[in-house]
Picture 1 (cartoon, rainbow, N blue to C red):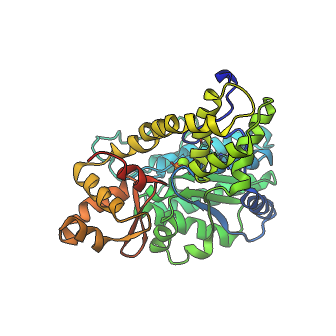
Picture 2 (picture 1 turned 30 degrees about the vertical axis):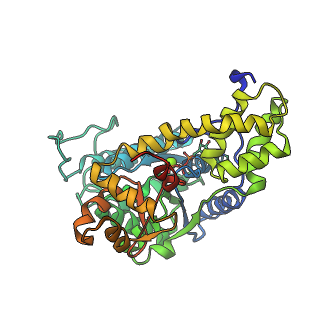
Picture 3 (picture 1 turned 90 degrees about the vertical axis):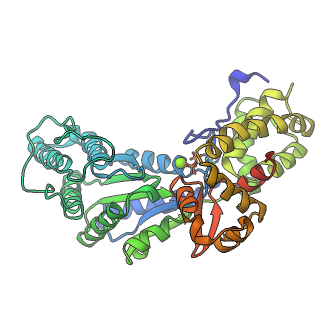
Length: 396
Ligand SMILES: Nc1ncnc2c1ncn2[C@@H]1O[C@H](COP(=O)(O)OP(=O)(O)OP(=O)(O)O)[C@@H](O)[C@H]1O
Ligand SMILES: [Mg+2]
């Protein structure tokens, strides 16, 4: 069928043509926004899940919901070894810029921007590998206001900055939402500072929330950092789509183009994609291009499947596999040979005929690269769905 009209959207963070199976999370977030805007105590939300289940897409949808309510919003994508100070400064700058045109008192905005600039420039940690300029110029054209949010201690500074940002939003009867993607990658000290700032803010009732998304071990990362984080955030585990949501994700966009699927085709697609949103989009896209006419049939899927698998092998699995060092690849192959459930690290070591301690660098490297996660103490699992299957199908 006409590839130009192909509605499907496989790709990191790509908005799907139909967001299905997330009604519960959307409703929950609506409640969070309403409550926070009314100064009611409310826990913020954290989305967790495997690669490609739709965390980024849902986070972006949450952001649109906040914008619709005229909130100020900003987003960061955390990176290992990178302090969140500058990204948070940029994101809050963006959020307050969204509010500024509606604010009656320009000096309040200017006052906040002065604090924000001082916060941004108070970076004390040297940036790894580079001689960072001593003063970062965040592109804020008001003078930095000294004495607030600029102590250099991120916990204190974030707390003061959040309180001030929240108070600007309070003037307008709205809130501010800071979205953090890949939250598990925030360096340990910064995560602790961020939790502490959220904790402070939740006590003062200021209308600012931090909404995060990350891999399944993110709750463990947060509670290792601050024991109260479990009470601070509401965790929503994002998972594969059930059969009806997966069907709808395929059917609704097709039907808008006057195209449909036979029931057999939908059976075959669900079997292949296993309800994982990325796979649903990937198989849907190839099936559309290959099918000569509507309805798309089970035979079309038979032809499409190897091609879709080939594309996933390169784009979804291969690109990640290539990020691993040879030792890390051996580690993952050993994991894959042990099946698809989380495996004890000691069993992986046995499989490789090595001492567990000698494998720590490979395991830690893979966790840092976001390829595996520690499901529970002593257990590891792939963050990428079907990764074990992919590895087992590769020639050694
Ligand atoms: N609810 C949904 N219904 C249909 N398709 C979806 C849904 N959520 C996400 N997708 C599709 O799944 C793919 C992956 O989405 P996204 O990048 O948000 O996943 P992710 O969880 O952030 O992955 P990663 O951990 O790799 O960052 C995209 O192609 C997107 O269009
Ligand atoms: Mg993502």
